[in-house]
Length: 423
Image (cartoon, rainbow, N blue to C red; front, top):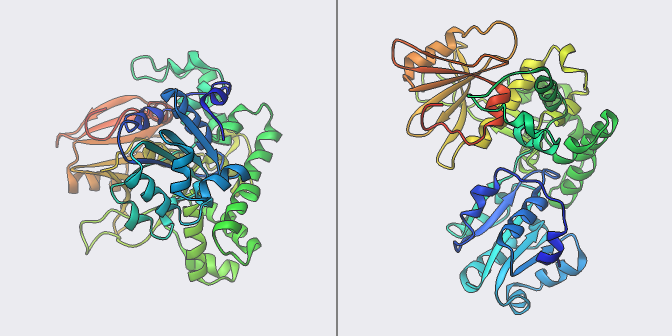
């Protein structure tokens, strides 16, 4: 078990999600942090503990002594900690952890609980039924571009990531290309060689993810599972065709659907559903898939070729755009793509009381297609977003829609903006 004195000795870097979490410290609900392996959940828990500053009890369930204390049950823990802030890292290792959280929240008001888990914890048996109204959940994603610059010690460049001061100088472009290529896993950002970065990213899947697969899921054909992960990288941004992949791998679509759900539950990929309000003309069932990190995507594709020499930069940018949008959407907002049966398409749609279409146009001439204007005509959104390489401007259409052209590095860097009003 660690105390606040132990945590104060650790060198920590700020994460933007911290501010959202801290407002829940005085509330009764348990704070649950999920996310992929190695995205920084442990250090985020340390950050929270350091902000609170006292009465901290930190348990890591990968440590046998800590596991023994916590696994003895809520009643035993309450005798060990009569009052304070209890942090439990890797809570997925605790049998029936939803029941444990429920007991703490319902019966031990002097204990404020913070939990983290290296998977989508909501898939656990009984999670939804037992914990409704008892938890507030946050998913930690890899670093944003602004956080990446902070980790790299480039604080002067962060000042350029605002509409008022934005200036795409060479060093900023170089940093963004590195970010696109190797992604936003914190330790990857801190490594100082290309070879070390690639080795580390490889281990994210081959070591850390496979460890969770063995302990949390039943996968009998590990080689086929890894091949599916690699093949999936070629489907990013396209309609997912499991039947075609099934033919290539010789594995049933049903099994591939299960593999896809496992990857989603491990927070390594995300599944994007279609937006539809017109049954007759709009696609309603086909899925798209995106990776949680562009470095992981490049590893799955088997290519770390320099960005300037890549023919798939548009796909990498679209994947990053997806993750950037995830950072911005609120709990009451939903993310979709839109596609008509005729082929008209918009990359992303954020839906709340209104809709906001978002198109990624990172390469070449920025020319919006008929599909984008078809969506604007059909739904008349107040705002639309086009993510570009370097164009920053606003354009108001005759119907009142404001199109915001925003460089992707600026959009990903400025995480506090949302979709409820103008940019």
